[in-house]
Structure formats: structure tokens, C-alpha cells
Length: 430
Ligand SMILES: [Zn+2]
Image (cartoon, rainbow, N blue to C red; front, side):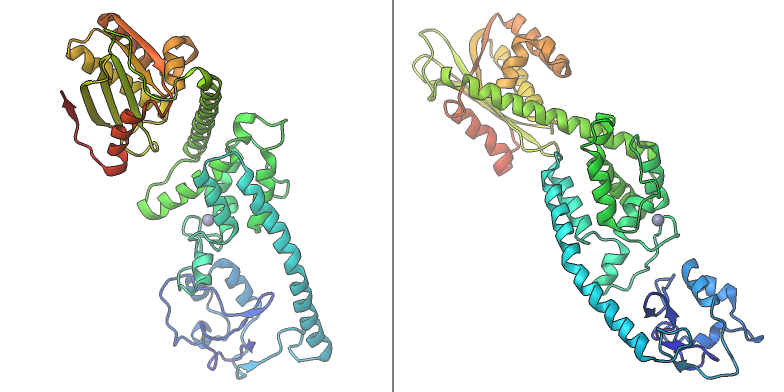
């Protein structure tokens, strides 16, 4: 590395003249840098470091590093061996460097092993797939933070733009940045006694380990994956949309999202269970209704909470002839059950408009039927269930029945044409 004399022969940005664990060039605080700049431009006429200039160019950690080794303006810069105190090469120090590199290489497999184990743990966490992927990327150094981008050769400012108090690494953003630290201290789980470390794998292992600690508040520990995700989203909104979310807001959003997702997943598994219990008494193929009875099959096609839903119904007579069928696109709903209930309401309102006052309504969504049969057990859907039952009272004789998906295939096919083929125009056919 370079030892600074008068600084004339050393380039600030191209030469290695900072002794950290390894010799290196200083960290640039600004995005733009003048590659012709010599270290001599940092030295005052009195022969000491120009501290104001150092602070302008380098982050605080490097200012300390540089000012610890005053320049010697009476001497020329020269190369020194970085691994002895006096800068002279010795066989002993050479062996020490080689030995250290060997140890570092031996350590790698063990590190990789524990990292792989942690990555496996991530896939088994009960959370949304997008969050699993995010955690996996955080662990793999595949998030667009300054450190990872610089590792890919992008010359961008290494410091964290939010707190300006450290290099922007994944661990910094998620754990030690001023913003993240506030979130963790306001979140009802214990943080490590010495604070979070600089190692993202160590920190993730710690916080993901908290999920299984039954003595902690279940609401908080199950929201930990969402909290990490929300911290990441908050960082992005500060950097890219100049919004600065309050840490209370970050915590509240994580708790809400976690609760919503867990509840919905529980409902889906309940629905599956209900489905399998009822399968035996459900016809596998569409059958004609009894003479004089109208049979209406309906279906809503729901993909996710951000997409339009499709809805369709078809009403047939006892001869199997279609009397009417209709299709519509609905605004996004937060889950499949909400979409199906909305579709039922829309169907009944349409039938009522067509002066049909009695029919069987067949859906393949077991949860929707269960909600209509026992509205008090589904308080979350109280308002839509109430509206459906109100239309039923006005119409007269309406009964709800569970169809197998196969027997409901025609309504399913029409509803799916909305979400699959983007057929957003509604129709009613006679
Ligand atoms: Zn920061």
C-alpha cells in the first residue's frame, strides 16, 4: 500500500492508501469523483491534513482512518508492506497473511453450510411467497442496496442515504439503519443484547428464531417476516418517492398485513376441509333440476387482491336449456370468498331485475354457502351477507347449494374468460 509523504504521487481514488483489515482506497461520499485528484490536495500549507476537505470527501469512518496517519510533506510517497507495524516486509508477517487467507478459505464451507440451512428455514416459514422470496434475496445479497450494486461494478455512493451513518448493506437497511432501529425498538420482540451485528445472516437467524418463541406475543412474532418486508418498502419509499413513513406506521402495516394473510390462509384451509367433507354428497356432473325448477350456476374467478375478478352466472330450466347467462368484471377483492359473495349478490340482483323470484343457486365455494347458512360465524362478511339475505327475502324462494367444480364448469369457464382473457365487458344474454 501507499504510505503518504507529500501526497504528490498518490491518487486519492485509484491508489490503496487506507489501511483497514486490508489496504484499500477510501470510500467516496459523493457519486461523482475527480480521478485526477492527488492526496497532496488534502494537505494544508502547514503540512497537516485539511480536515474540512476530508469531511467533504469521505465518510466519518475514513476521516478517522486518514487523520490517524499524518502526512510527511518532506518525504515522497512510497509503497510499504501493510502487514507490519513499521511497514517493512518480514517473512513472519508474510506467513501471517497467507495463514489468514488459508483460514478464511477453510471457514467458507462452514459459512455456506449455515447459510444454506438458514435459506432452507426461510422456505418453511409460514408467510406469503413474495416475502419468502424477499428474505431469500436479502440473504443471497440480491437486494438492490449500495453494497450489492457496487459488488456488481456499479459506481454508486456507498453510504446509506437515509442516515448517512454507515455503508448501505442489506444488514444496515434491515437492522442497524436509524429508521430500522426505531422500528425494531418499537416492535414488541426482544432485540439482541449487544444490538444487531453487521452480518445479515446472523441477524436474520436471530429474528426468524423469535417466531418460534411461544413466550412472546403471537401477534408480533408471527408478523416478523412482514416487518422486514415493510422496513424494506419504507426504505424504498424514502429513496424513490421521497415519502418518509413513520416507524409506527411501518409496524402497524406489518401487523395488519400479517393478520390478514394468516386469517385468509386459515380460511382457505377451512374451505378445503369443508370441500373434502362435502365432496361425497355432491354430484360430480351437472344435472337437470326438478320439473318447474330453475337452476342457476354461478362462479367468480379470483386471482389475487390486486386483479380484477370475473363473475358469471347461467340459469337453466328442467330441460337443460339456458334461459339467461351473464358475465361481468368486478373491482379487486381481498380474497376469493369476498369475490364469490359479491358475485352471488350481483347474480341475485340480476335475477330479481329479470322478475325471476324462485330458483336454486349453485356455487362451488363451500365457504360462501357456509357463510350464508351461518352468517354470525362469518362476522367479517357481515355486510355483504346481510345484503344477499335481504335480496333473498324480497325474491321469495331461493335456496343455496354446493356444486362440485366440475358440475359448475360452464359458469367457471365464462367467469375465467374475464381474468384469463381480459374480457372486461359485461353482457346479459337471453
Ligand atoms: Zn442508514
